[in-house]
Length: 172
Image (cartoon, rainbow, N blue to C red; front, side, top):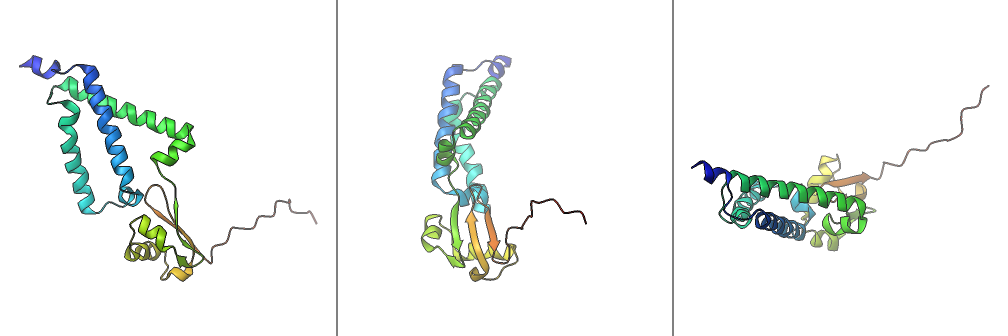
């Protein structure tokens, strides 16, 4: 009984490889679904992630439910995630692939319909982001950008960068 808990039935290297492959598969799958899905979870998106984690569990552990197999798999996932974060920090070209790039949705008061189609964003979702920023129309927006994390940054027309005088004040 106690041996089942501590002794894995699958070799540790196989467990690590399974966890690594599942991590990479899910990373690619989630990246292909678009950044909007990651940053703005609707209830059905949350359900999908929960069910997805259950669906890949056996692919990772191969039916080995020992404590040791769980520790090996979870350590591999956390270690892989750390290494991916480190690699995307070091190599910006990789960050563009893994994390994506920001998408300009509105420029000079006009929505970019092609960009919205590419990101699978509806006008209702775009207008909700504008209302969150106290705006009521696309024409009020200098630019709106869908960030890598799924959030929408909105810069209204009335916002201008502050002018800074770099000279010290003169004594009178």
